[in-house]
Length: 256
Length: 248
Image (tube, rainbow over all chains, first blue to last red; front, side, top):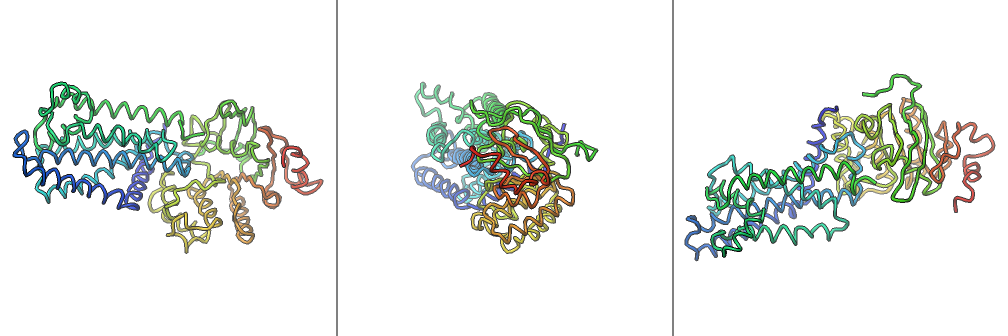
């Protein structure tokens, strides 16, 4: 049994951070501008005409969802594009010929992508503070949700990075699953504003638990069962992690 | 940790190796042992199975059947121990084209578990050795073909592997640089590094190798010392004779 190659994992994280800063406009500036626009339009402009929602100002209500949306996008796009690009340029072979285990490769990609998500989250939190939109009821729960959700989308991004055969395919999941499911997960509205059937459907949307969880951590208001949310997040991390491990172990679309 | 103790133990043992891509078999029951310290030339026409063999040895390809041992470690079941002993300079430039040579060396050193200080020292040494000092901070995509080749060679040597696999290492390199690389390869070999070289420059094989093998259609056609191989003429003449009808 070999010891864990921590240096390799750390190197992969450093490589991803280097990549993030290499295209800083695309990876950091763009999501911060998008989030700032969301906060300004939905929080300040629209929010002025809304008294309160579930007892808090609208800007305070929507901010956690906007933050989560950015974390999801950052972690997903980081791992999917990084892995796809490594396959496209065959630079993945640098790792395949090195004494790095599949688990270490997965952790390296995952932690590197989570790192980008954390940088983006920190910058958006800063913008939120400037707009007076940030409150933090449970810092521990906040950290757990941010880490859990960014881990899920890093792993999902790796799946797409392995699966995609073209740059177009790389954006398919984002366009058809992530974006609509996140928007329908209650970022901008309370589930109680929906008709009963729509409420039930929303409960089946895992993104609802991500948004609700972070909102609970930030403003102390939850519309979902926290236990169900924890099971959804934990289950997805384990399920996606196992799938990615299996694919790497079998060499699917990585080893010839 | 290397598993072999004796100089007589082959550094590479390929045992009944079969590699197929779908229904197409590239290598079938292929056997090859390479002794420690040799300079081994691997020849064959395009599609003969040379790169497939290298891919199976290094971990890029999955093995269909058979076994490959590097320094006594199985490349499938003890892949980490096996890979630590191999340095690969591939035919294609398989690098992050936006990274600089220094970053590439640093990252690869990290994958092999080298500490930051060792990586820095080794990277600087290789940058100097391969005359890349003026290009160390340029993106890989901005470099000429010869410089790119030198970067991938430096990358293969970052962890000082006992077995170096050079797949067309001087393709795209000018004559002067080629001779300079030859000198370096000789020095490396003399200092104990086993080298496996594939090249379409048969002169290169003749100049450098102590042993030559020809693969064609996934089979080993011949394996001889360079002296025996060149008894009746040049490497090129014998190569063409043995592979005639298989090249065009």
